[in-house]
Image (cartoon, rainbow, N blue to C red):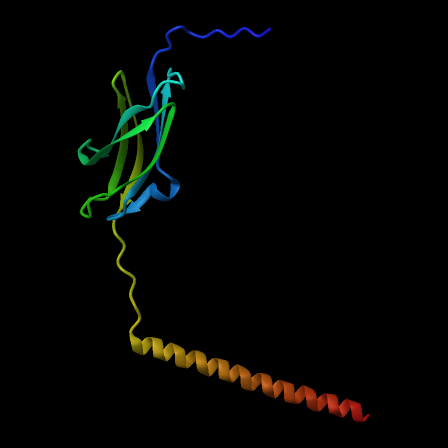
Length: 168
């Protein structure tokens, strides 16, 4: 037979994992960062009632200064998975930042971090002037019309050669 050994009093603790999706690891000023968080409640019996977990999201710069901080409470039995958008101030300077996720329940707490980078804002793309757009449209029209005339001429030459061959 199969023998299963289980500890009588499993230690209750939290495992926290945070990841920043690939598309959000390099941002420009004014963009938000996303944090995918997974919290596993280790040592809990699945038949236990729902437990409230306080989740704190803290964005810090490389000097450990807090840029933004929010918290929320989520209920879970064994696992909690959250995707969170963290809005950053518009005036945040370029550099390396970290998102720290801290989860706590009455009897346990854990935290982990992930880093991301903010680059300088790109200048807004120039919108061509209306005259430039009109001139591009006219050029395109002339090219298409020229192609049409050239094709018609080639078709007329091929037809003329075909008729000449049929007469022989």
